[in-house]
Image 1 (cartoon, rainbow, N blue to C red):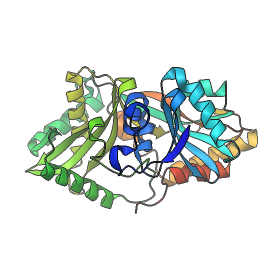
Image 2 (image 1 turned 45 degrees about the horizontal axis):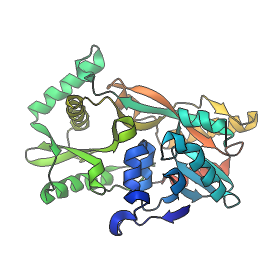
Image 3 (image 1 turned 90 degrees about the horizontal axis):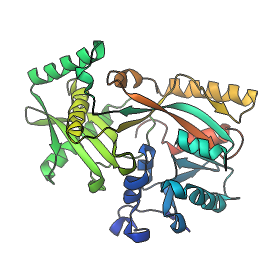
Image 4 (image 1 turned 45 degrees about the vertical axis):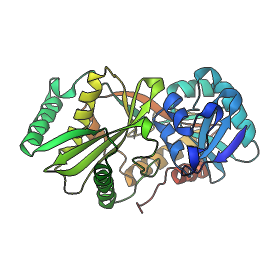
Length: 341
């Protein structure tokens, strides 16, 4: 049982048991939140007996864990027990961010005392074409595809190690970052071409200029993908991002894929609250409302609605009873909350 802070720029990414790297664990057993484990600032707890890992940051005296434990389902209890033993006396609380309903149900029967629903994971099924359905949203998507043709926007998948294309794709990311305004929350720093075997890239090109990029991370346990990055340049036509998403879904449909997760979008209000007193519930609900307003966390809801997604609840899960100021500060610090640098 070891705890390491991984330097992802060193040789072989610090191989774990059976020559598995952190990226291998994330691909094999991870969910969308698990990609945070690929950030160099994330601590990795490894339990060889359970053949699993947990990614976390220590903030405000709390261990803020990214999502569910990354291991086979049969090893969850052993991995969690070892992690709690390791953290005993060194942190005030262990809080999982964007935990799944399945793990929350297990957790409340074992090591955890607080659960708060914070939003819904947005899931697309590529086997259904959203632009071929009925209604306004489908018609709107068809119109955007027609506009893209008139504007000579072409979507391609990046399949070769072409340094010129990759340079242009990275320029898209730089332009997108420069255009971000206001307060932001994000899991990890942008690193488009690290851990290449676990990723796919689609890019939008207009008149030989790359104006947008979409990146997918492979998730074997879901037989699908996490849409990790969707970026356009500041001068790209507004329809570019939707056309990128539709083109990626078209490609995955041909491969008989039926799962693409977008990640968690915040709810308009807290719904499920377990383990808090009436006063603490009031505090949590009002704090959540303030954070979602300041960070404009509802702004993406309307965008993804047009793709007619499915949803799954996403939770905060705490080992102690209650989520207070200390935990909120720790969570916001772990999610890089603030103005973009």
